[in-house]
Structure formats: structure tokens, C-alpha cells
Amino acid sequence: MAARAWLSGRVSSSIGDYALLADLHTAALTSTDGSIDWLCLPRFDSDSVFAAILGTPDHGRWLMAPSQGTLTGRSYEPGTFVLRSSWTTPTGECEIVEFMPIDGDRADIVRSARCTAGEVTIVHDLRLRPEYAASLPWVRREGEGQDEDGAALVAIAGPDAYLLRGPALTAAGRRHEGSFTLTEREEVVWDLTWSASYRPEPDPLDVPAALEETRTYWREWVGKASVHGRWSDAVERSLLVLRALTHVETGGIVAAPTTSLPEDPGGERNWDYRYCWLRDSALTLEALLAHGRTGIAHHWRDWLLRAVAGDPDDLQIMYGIAGERQLPERILDHLPGHLDSRPVRIGNGAVTQFQADVVGEVIIALDKLRRAGVDEDEFSWSLQRAMIDFAARHVDRKDQGLWEMRGDPHYFTHSRVMVWAALDRGVRAVSDFGLPGPVEEWARLRDELRTEILTRGVHPVTGGFVQHYDTDEVDASLLQIPQTGFVPYDDPRMLMSVAQMEVELMHDGLLLRYRTNGTDGLSGDEYPFLACSFWLVEQYALSGRIEDATALMDRLVDCRTDLGLLAEEYDPDGQRQMGNFPQAFSHLALVRAADALEDVAPTDRSPR
Image (cartoon, rainbow, N blue to C red; front, side, top):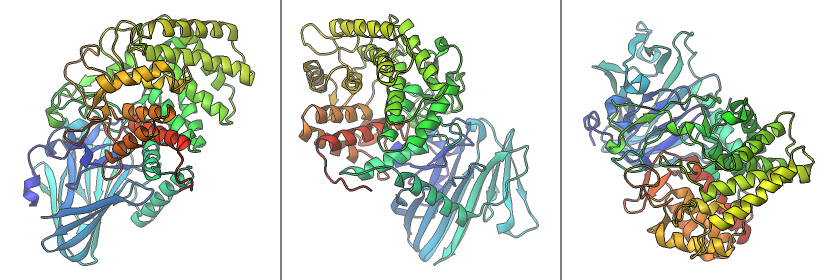
């Protein structure tokens, strides 16, 4: 494809075409066309400077690719997020390397091109569009008296400054372009650096040293994880994704690095996931603990203590990366959305919802942390006790459920079980570890709640669990019930629930969350939710259906992109990823499913 064909029109790359680049502060998405179409600097939740994935190239992107080139292969260097792409052109071949350095004092993205055969021409189309493409920066060239390689492009927009160092690009209207011909073994490097506009410019990056340090960091981190078995490659990449979505300074774990990638193309199911859900973070913690990464668990617990400090009745379901509480949802009308999916949202209105299950998820994770040998400090148990007391005070309150329904509140069976789990783990903390707490009151409420759930949360005719007390529908969240210990995986009520899900929620072998028949208060539909299908793998495996579990696990692993990444949902008919990407919930569920299968049907036990 000629370079000029890339300069206008809608972005054609599908969600699964993107590679993730990460530096433990933020992340970029770079497409198979060689275009970085999403980047927020310096944090995951900062305003974007490239937002073409939500519109057109003029909403911000950085294309760097060989003219008339064809991508012949791409992969991460093993155990890292250093991306290598191979290209062929009519006149030669080249390799492009992209990475974000792991350096807490900087925010850079490095892209290099090296000709490996013949001659290639590398073209650029740089469109810096700060504030989600709502503004244009003031751009100047620094070092005009130097040779081209010594000059830097400097763009300033309010508090943000962007410096591009490398062979000079040329202004062309409201973008910058360049064309650079390389012969065999010639290499060119560009480094885009963010800094606060009111501070001195950062020194030039030592690219070879930064590349080696970045490789070493990722490989050493994942090398300390205990990974083995048939799906070890998928588990390793998923653990790396979970680490990449964890802010290195605050310990906050974002659900995804993107906003408004649609669950329903052309519809309204577009949400901002660049925040820290207590539920998702707790489940991520469990996955990392299961593979020996207790250090990150300490970090997250400290984040939690800061985020929820204060009155327990002010507990939220999500927070900002540093524990911010105000995450107002607003619409960016100037962005047309990915696949024309509107509205494009930033912030998340679900922050104000009451979701009763959240306390249970957090208390389960912290119970596992305690049982892994991590001692409570002077604040951590008092926090947990306050959260359990919060659950006890609100035990009779209806909620919006795991899936953040925007319809009427109900007594969701999954939520009721999670409240039971919070009380149950509180009782165990007192009885097993001698921690102080009103154990008699917690035990009484726990047992009353169990009786209620088994009476009102089970359908009188089918004998299976129901989505909530006012319906006979099922919901894939019910697959989490045995994960809490409320009933065994092979309990007849669970088996009946699974049988009903297989009839009502299965789509081409993958599982929907629920039937979108108005309960969630939204228009449109959605695709199978990947985490739910991984939960079904776990359910199959631990209820004796090992062949079914293995077949479904293989199917799900095949749904990953060529780089091992998963979005929130998957369209089996179009064979494409949908929703925010990559999604922590999907990757942590993959890890759980692989672990469950290894527990009941171990394959290769040799560590990786």
C-alpha cells in the first residue's frame, strides 16, 4: 500500500490488530499498519495525544512504516513487551523495533528501523493531538543550526510537552512527515518523549542502554513467576499483561489501558476502563499470588489502604490510579468512535453504583494473601474489619450486580454470595488467625444469608441458581459461586445452572454474560465475554468434565491475537476482539482456568 493512502480516512485496523507497548505508567497501541493509534501520557488515565483508534488519523497518530511495505511477521521478544516487526517491500526488507523504556523518571516511546536487505524507504506521518484531539500543540524545531539528526521537534500544549528526537520530519499543514531511504545494515531511531512543559527538557535517551534495561526488567519479573504446563506460554503472557497494567509507583491496577472500544459496534456500550476496580484488582492479585508474585500484592494492599481511607460508608467500586475518588463521566462528541460507536466516554459513571459483591472479592483476595504468609500490618486488618462491617450494615441492600447494570437494582445471587464470602472470611480470620472482630455477629449474618440464598436464589422448578431473586434467568456470574467455597463445583445446583447456561447463554461455543433483554438498562447487544468462558473451563475441570474443559481452553487460547492478547469480548462469527483491549479480566481468568486444569489433569510440570 502506498504511503499516501494512509494519510486520510477512518482507521481500518481492528482491535485485535494492535500490539501493546507498556512502561508501567501508561501504554500505547500500535497497529499492523505501523501506526500508533492510542497513547496517553504520562499515565494510563491522562488525556490522549494519539486517539486515531477512536476516529480518524487526524485525531492523532504516529505512523512509521516502509513505503509500499507488507508486514510479514511480528512478535514480542520472549518475556518482554519489546515488539519486533518484519516488513518486505518491492526493493528490500527491514525490521522495526518498538518499546517503551522502563524508567520511572521518563516517559518515552522508541521506534527504530533497520534495513536487512536491499533498500527500503521509511515514511512517517506524525499528528500530535493533545487533550483527546481537542487541541493542536504549538510546534517548533529546536537546534535549527545543527544537522538534521541533532534537531528535535518540540510540541507544547498547556502543561504537556512532546519532544521527537531523530532524523528531522517536515511540517505539512497540521502534521509532520518524513521519508528516509536506508540501504542494508543502515538503521534510524526516533524517540518521542513527554515532559511537563514548565520543566527543563529531558536529556536525550541512551537508547541501547534503555532497550537492554527494559528487556532485563520484563524477563527478570516474569522469570520469578512459577509457570508450567500445557498453556504456560499463554499464562506467562497473561501475567505480563497484568503486570503491564499495574502502575509501578501507586500499585493501582487498571482494568484496561483504553476507553470506549465498543462491545457492540455502532452502539452505546462504550466505557472507560482506565481505572482501578476493586473487584478486578482483587482477582488480579489472586492470579499473581498463585504464581508466586507476592511483592505486587503488598504494593496493591498499600494502594487499597490509601484509596479507601476514611468512612467505610464512602466505599466505591473503583478509584483512580493513585486512589482518586472523583471520576465523572463525560462524552467527547468530537470523536466519532471506533467503528462509529458512540458515545466516546471518559470517566465512568458506574463509580457511584452500589455493587455488593466488591467487598467479598477484596476480602477473599486479602484472605489468600494472609494464608500465603503475608502478615497483617497495623492498618490492614482494621481496614478489612471496617469493610466487613460495611457489608454487614448493607446486608439487606439491593445492588447493580457484577456487570454494573444500569437498570433497577436487585438482589443478585452472585452479589449475595459475595457478601456471604466477606462475612465467612471475617469469621475465619478470627478463628484461624486470632484477629479481633465481632465473630458471633458475623457468623449469624453469614448463616442467615446462606439460608436466604439457598431459598430465594435457587429456582424452585429447575433447581439451579438464578441471576437475581426476581427472575428465572441465569447469568454467567453464577460460575463464581463455587470459587468462594459457598458450594462445591459438582453441587447439583451448580450443575443445573451450567446446563441452563449451555442452552441460554452459549454462542458458537463461547459464553455470554447474560441475555441482554432489558435488565441492564442499555440498548443493543454484545458478544461472548471471554472471562465467563474461562470460568466455565474452571467449572468443567473441577466438576469432572476434563475433556470439555480442555477443549474449551484450547478454543479460548486460540482466540488470542498473534501476540497473545485478549480484549473483553470475542466475536466468533467475525473472529475479532471486541471491547477494551487488552483486558485484565480476560487475562486473569485465563490464568485461573489454566491453573484449574493443571490441578486436576497436570501435564508438563517443568517450570518455565
